[in-house]
Length: 622
Ligand SMILES: [Zn+2]
Image 1 (tube, rainbow, N blue to C red):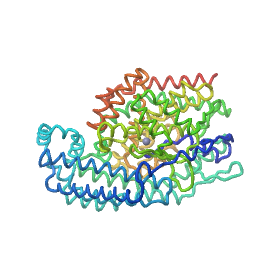
Image 2: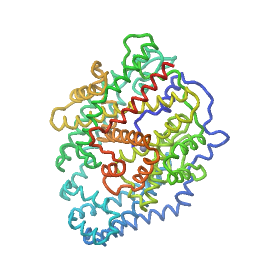
Image 3: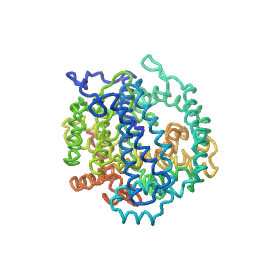
Image 4: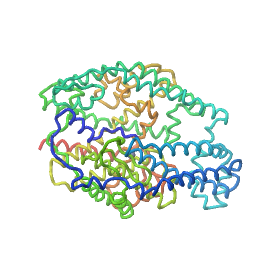
C-alpha cells in the first residue's frame, strides 16, 4: 500500500534540512553492523542467472499447461481442481520472480533486468490465461455446489473460484471488454500525468529562513513546523496560493477521471466507480457509510484535540489567534528514543511476543540478519520508502534509528509474517491475497503492539511521552483520513449526478465534508482547495478508504487485545493464518466478532483514544 502517512523520520529529516534538528551523533549500525543488514538474494532466491532463467521457464511451462484447459473450464470437479492447482503453482513462481526483480531493483535502481523479465512474463501470463475468467462465467452456483460435494478437496479453492465468479454478472461481452481494455490508456493514463505536470509547472512562492530560501510547494510540511511564526505563516500563504494556481487543471483532470471511470462502472451495473471499488474489496456502501457517520458523530474528540493544540500554541507563542500553521510544531518536553538496528530487531521481537510462538519463530527467522531477508542500510541508487514482498523479506530505504524507522520494521514484518503463516498453513501464495485494508490492518496492529511495549518498558519519562504523543497523533489521524475518504466518495457521487463539473465543484464538496470533521474548515476558506493535496485521487483512485478501514481495524484489534491479550492473540493468529478462505467481512466477524456494520463499531475504541488524550494533557501539565 502506498504509505502516505508522514513519517517521523521524514519530518526529522525535513527539520534537519531547515537546520534546527538536534545534532547528536548517533550510529544506527555500530561496529560495522551495516554489513549485516543486506539481502542475500543468492541464498533466498537463485544461486546464479541460470537458476533464475530456469524459474522463468517454469512460469512459462505452467502457463502452457493452463492453456490446455481452454474450452473446458468448469466442465468437471476434477478439471477445476487441476486448473486451480496450476494457478496456485503459477502464483508461487510469479511472486518469487516478482520479489527477486523488485529487490534487485530496490537496492540498485539501475539493475532492472530481472524486473523487466518479470513484467514480460506476467504480461504473457495475463493475456494467455484471460480465458479462465471468461469461461468461469458459465459456472453456475448449482454446478459449483455439486462439484464441491463430489470432490471435497476442491474446497481449498472455493474462495478463489467464487472470487472470480462473483464478478461474472458485471462482465461485459468479450468484444466490449476487449475494446475497453484497448481504450484504457487513452481514457485513464493522462489525468495523473497532467496533474503532476501542472504541479511541476507551477511556481510555488519561496520563503526565506536561516539564510536559505525554501520552495513552499515541496517544503510545506517543514515550514509549518518552523519555530518562527512569520516563516510558518509565509509558508502557509505561499502554499495556498500555489494550490489555487494549480486548481483549474487539477479539477479538469479529476472530473474527467471520475466521469470516465463512472461511465465504465455504470456499464457494469454499478452506481459509480466508487461503488464498484467497494464491491471489488468486499465492502458495502452501508459499511463505509456506517464508518463515516460514526467518525462524524465522534469528531468532537478530534476537535478537542485540535483546540488543545491551539491552546498549547497560544501559551507558547503568546498569541490569541492561533491558526492551522501554529499547531504542528514538534512538542517540547519529549525526547524520542533512538535504536540501533540490532536494538530495533530485538525490540520488535519482544514487542510482538504476545502473538505467540509460531509467529515468534517466523519473526526471528525473518529478522535474523544472517538470513539475508532484510536490506535496510542507506546508500546510493536505492529506492525510497519501504516495502515487503510476500514472505520473502523487506526493503527499507535508510534505517536511521528513529521511532518511525522501528515502526516501519514492525509494519513490514507484519506483511512478511502474514504471508509466511498462510503459506505454512495453506501451501500457496494465492491464499494470502486479500483486500488492502485487511492486510494493512495486520501490519498496523504490529505498530500498536510496538508502542504498547515501549510504553511499558521505557524508563525515561520524556521518552515515554514521545511514544504516547506518537500514538495519540496516529489515532487522531483517523478523522483526517475519514474526511479525505468521504470527500472522494462524495466527489464520485457529485460527478455522476452532474453537480461537479470543475474545481469549484470539488471545492464545495471539500468544504462541506470538511466541516463535519474538522474545526478549521468551518472558518477558513483556504481549506476548500485541500483536496488538491492528495495525489491519491489521481494516482490510486478510490484507494483512500482503505486507510480508514485499516486504521479502524488495527485500533479494534488493539482494543480487543488490551481486554484479553492471550485470548485475543489466539483468535487473531487463527484468522491471519487461515488466509482468505471466505470474504473479509465474514472473516472479521467469524474470528473476532468485528462487524463493520455495527452502529457501535467505534464505541470502546474511542474510550482508548480519550484516555490517551487525557494522559497527554496531564503529562503536559507536569
Ligand atoms: Zn503496509
